[in-house]
Image (cartoon, rainbow, N blue to C red; front, side, top):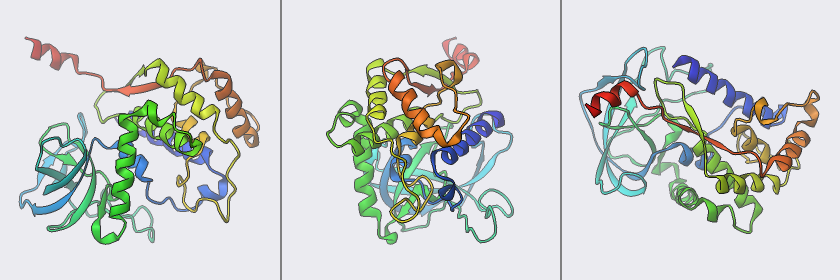
Length: 302
């Protein structure tokens, strides 16, 4: 498991660094865009925290984890279910209990890395993923909860609704007139497909629908490949702007697909653009799928 997620973390880091000019890469990474949070969440709701359970639970954060983690459970009355939570009025949300010197501590003095938490009577927008035990949803990080008091919740809810609709109607989203919106949709859909779910097994891949794959690749090919300029007018935070290059690196293209990075890093953008245009109708995008535990399935069958 460590091997799987360590490799994925490395891949994400390299992707971000390759996809942004060096000056941006050296800046502090800010909150992930709403689109990324929507793409990675299974359940998205607005609501009010009605209670915090006194008794904590200690469980594996994912199947096959080496250690159990202590979680605090909050009960949230659902105001609006944007994704998932169908027919539910309340949802139990688990967030990690504070740990001295453990996960949630500042990565480096001064950065102020916060830990996800909820408080009674708090009104929030939540981006959640189900715990594999099925008893509650997990609040993974501090940016997966948006407090109404922050002042951006109304705007963020509308953005989340927009992206949820893109995921439910991907072909339509990829055919709108605005090229920027098409690229945004491609990034959202690729992120959803290329985000593996926590599992004790190495994630497996399988091709997505051929027509949808071609539509995404053509969206990339038709995008504006002009590199964004750093400084004034450019994004202040790493990952704040979607570019065709960032979407490409999320595809997980390998040498067996005919991809070889150029020796001259300054030509990376140009080289990737050429590869995408030459392979837009040949390359088949793949998605991560959960590998079922055959032993468990056999037992169920018996």
